[in-house]
Image 1 (cartoon, rainbow, N blue to C red):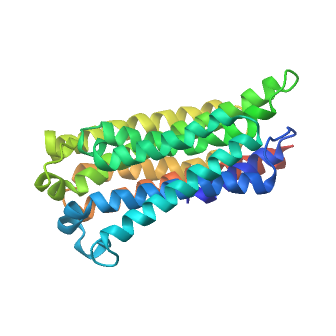
Image 2: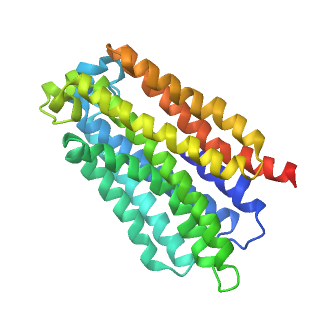
Length: 295
């Protein structure tokens, strides 16, 4: 999903604009590969430290200690991290911005600290994971737009970067809500492991109300965005798409979380948010086609 998102932004959107891009196709492929490797490393280290909670919450999904040993999992984690950071370092030097390599080290470090410490801290862990997903959108602009920006094309590049920022904010909001819902789903295991997640600290019902509040804010912001940017530019296909795939499911989420009680209910709501995120990102293709069709 991460790779698909980054490829979509490049080839369905940025490539359709009449602007120079800093990366060749194979170099952009390296950027996608590096991002995916670091995300995979984060997933592995998270699984290593989640064995205790997963044994309680999802006993059938436990891999570390069953499918592979903990030592093997650590070796995979180290290999994925070294590969991801090394590719990021090579890429940063290719575009003559060696300091950009620090972004990959920062991402790898945050994923490690999330798995080992931050996820146990109320709200902070949720915030970091959502922020990292947003960063995977912004990094496209940092590597593909920023190095190719000149005095002549600065205004157009800033406009494109602004659109990427809008999508990064959308990804952050939806994933932040989803992280809270996942914590509610996993509350029993987290409680037994002594994690101070939001539902452990204030209870499932109050945590659900907070998720509801954020969902209402996201719904209003998405609605205003559609009105401001799609309706006023007569992108009616994009408006219809956003209503069907983002606004309507968000409204469904808002209604259903009122009556959600069981682990199964919250798992269903988490899946709904994942679909909203996927179709929301896919809207960049719909917008690009709508603009082309209108032109």
